[in-house]
Image (cartoon, rainbow, N blue to C red; front, side, top):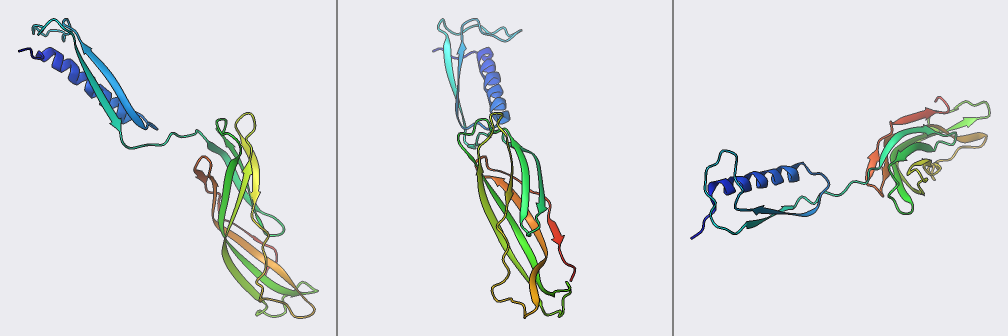
Length: 211
């Protein structure tokens, strides 16, 4: 009966160990890796004096499966992002994203933030007659936009939130004007939902009238 000599077993063990190391280091791989190992009669380790066992080459198949199912990354990344507040109180996020050369069609972006707005009533002189003539509202805001990458695989654009609206139950008496006194945006997140990556601009606020 034929048996595998120690030198062939050692060779097979080294190759299998190397394959496991490669799979462990590989990133973004999902599927099956198949390797073929052929051991012939003259295969031996240096310094090994074992005799070959038989005249036919022995072929072993090693199948390693990566079950972690890691998704292949697109290479998309943000070069820069900044935010500002316009005169009407809306949040404007400007960004520069690259690595989108493999995207087919448009890239979808979602902008999320929490907004706190202070409204007040002022008279013709720009003063606030009564401390009670003001109200603060807070709410989450979300806006979605789509852009087509340039030929160099980049999108340079800006996204704005929807215009703010005062509470429906808040109004000013005659001779006074309803204004947006100040606004603040926190937990600002811009997400490239096509590539599934996000960036976090800083929280920002702006005061139009000191109350």
